[in-house]
Picture (cartoon, one colour):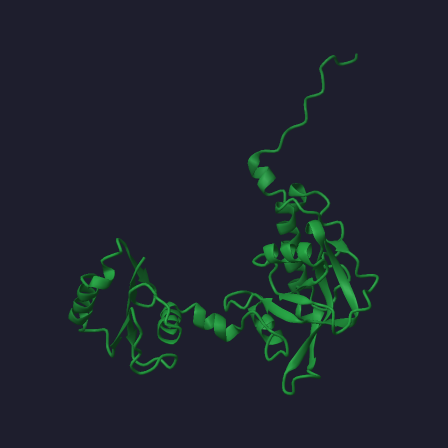
Length: 283
């Protein structure tokens, strides 16, 4: 006896199931260029570092509605000389994706993303004694319309400008800072600079005392001496109070905070921000 019941419609996955479906469900086909074992195509030197960064890049491209990266590494690119422009981005692709895409539109092929320390090498500079040149043997280059390609370079491609994720807490910060150290080309930062900029007190003191730039009124309490600040730091808008022992100095802290909040410098401000290092400032 034939059944007269109709086939039930295909079940639609729940939002929870869709959430756990993975990036392949969000953008079908974006993993097609990866090797079966999950490594970046053709990369065997540092699979974990490169693969994770490569996956983040593909996910970011997918979210922007851009095509996945093509694997062109089987045929090395040749013909790059010292006059060819190469802007190298080291480390995580996410913070610099807008720069990479815009650079690809303005100067196709000049923007190269390096996702692993095994993709680059440092050699003594031929033009600046004591400095180093950064050579790229592999990278993701960006072209017009958001297109990108994983390429190998033979001979290695020399970087003319280098920047990257120098943030101390970034997973790639260690090798990025090492590759970008003492280069013979301009760089967009360094690990020591990132350390200084993440310290609000040091950053405001440098801007006010060294660059004569206005900063929000700032009151900071520090314990003991700090080697990154002078013994008596004087900077417009920055008030630093040293506490030898925080115990028993509550009255001093209260007096300083009261004078700071009641001062003329705070009159334009309606809110006060508290810093993690014992700082008070206008916002």
